[in-house]
Amino acid sequence: MARRVCGPLDGPLLPYGAGFEASLAGQGYSAYSIGCQLRLMTHLSRWLERRHLGAGDLGVDCARRFLQSRRAEGYAHPVSMAGMAPMLGYLRSVRAAPSADAGVALTPVEVLVGDYRRYLLEERGLSELSVPRYLDVARAFLAHQSVGCPAELRGLTSGDVSGFVLSESRRRSVEYLKSTSSRLRSLLRYLDMEGLTSNVLVAAVPSAASWQLSGLPKAVSAADVASLLDSCDRGRTVGRRDYAVLKVLARLGLRAAEVAALRLDDIDWRAGEVRVHGKGNRQDLLPLPCDVGEAVVEWLQDGRPRCASAAVFTRVLAPHRELSARAVSGVVRQACRRAGLPPMGSHRLRHTVATGTLRAGGPLDEVAHLLRQRSLAATSIYAKVDRRALSGVAQPWPGGAA
Image 1 (cartoon, rainbow, N blue to C red):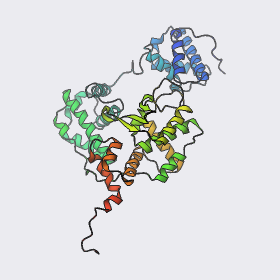
Image 2: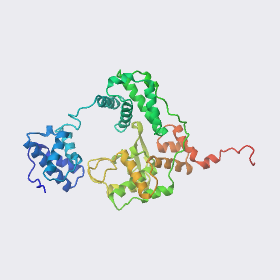
Image 3: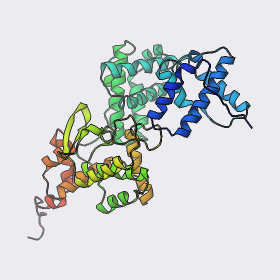
């Protein structure tokens, strides 16, 4: 059995102990977890000192060697690098330890993708949430063509481009394929701008065959929405948060990213309004229904942990970061599992708000305002599910009964 590390922090990590402790407390870690992390830092600092190393030598390989040495001494925790993530993350944030990819040899393709990422962020102005989807398409395309270095891109042909899109079409939905084609064109424009390919390749990207307004938005029945809400155990902290998230989605029709982006100062409790940060840096004010406000208040007053984050919805367990858009969608999927319903995305609840408004007699422009859609053309698809309104304009069948 390993002997527990005791005594004060010393060695090369001594200057960072107080800051690390304050950082953990600010992220909502318990006193027990903070103590475990500080003992881990003490052990690591002494290990570095014995090898005449400093914080600047604490790269990924060095951290792994420490973990191996720690296990050899009989320590069971942490079992992986994930247990060292809080400490390494802090040391990197104060520039004491090298970044995660420092000293790692990047392949020429990885360097190219990194340059493309900077282009998307700095030149195109894309958000941090959107860029990973573009990079996924870039990596998939380069892997499909077996590109090993930028020089090999000069041999790409129009057939290579259309072949990649065709291969994706066999296993993707039409909507996904449309976004893939758009992101592939972005990559090819960048490669042409860098002089790595010809501009002709951009025109070779085929468009996904689809017809405007051909589909039907899939709404959720009122009974299923009630089942999702009832599945949340509001006697627990996570249940109160998930209930509030589902209420916001089901009543306001927000996108998952918009729920994740809500901040505490976005809610005007006196006016009963909430500011929504939408696409294209657009901000809109929406009325805050009483039942939604009550659910959010229950989470804020008797659930949300005290932390430095200004987000309305945060993680329940430390570190108390804001929920990501993916985590918001995960709340819906988990509720479906608990309620015994087929899995669905958060966007289904947005469709439910739109169709419910129409069926209650609301006009299309009201739905467009509620969903914050600038074009009525995007909203008109919901008219197809309003059977009562459509029956009023239906023409009699030729030759049918009068």
